Image (cartoon, rainbow, N blue to C red; front, side):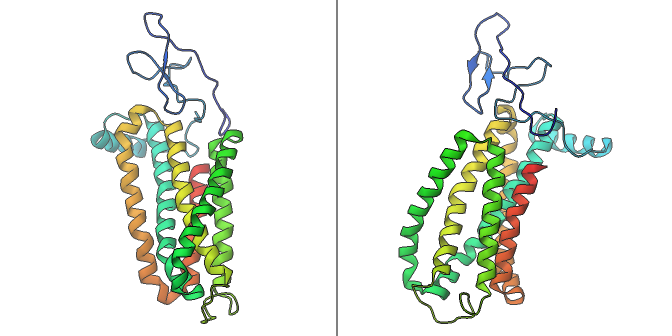
Length: 270
């Protein structure tokens, strides 16, 4: 099928002809025994929000075999298409968490340098209302758009927002070269609230999307791998801030966080 095509739901029943039950994970149906149902081709049914397609990039047979054996040793028998899906999702979570922790490390220092440290409690309160507004838009779009397209919309939106903020941070008028902090300087507020909304929204979107396109058996065996890759990102993000801020400047490091948003979009697309 073409990329991101949807496979229509197929009716399923148990071997005794009884009705199927709805598992509630990603819209999957399952037999009363709890096993995943099969579609008309004999493969496991993924759900209405899943994308049943072959890996977009060819894998050499040797690499495919090594990958399957490695995952089998760590997580049990996992079909190769599921392994590819988990690898792409782990890359998505790596860029998402790595970019978030990189920017989170800059969130309070940037606000304090531009607006003054005394405005941090007020910025925290303001971010609550900003997040509520963003989540309202997200819930509306969730009803009218496929989940993978939400990654494109929100990922590219945050890329442009973080890129714009990084550019303005280098401005002698609006940015950090202006060493006179003032609560009236909007750039500090914008940086703080944008980072807060990203952390609240995108992680929820990721797990909602992941639960809708992976099999329950895969979730049980490989979510630990996803979490481990995310932890690597959460370590590398602040490490980049610590090691490279003196060389690249805060604006340059901020750009690294912005480009992580493109990594999120690219890993979902592939």
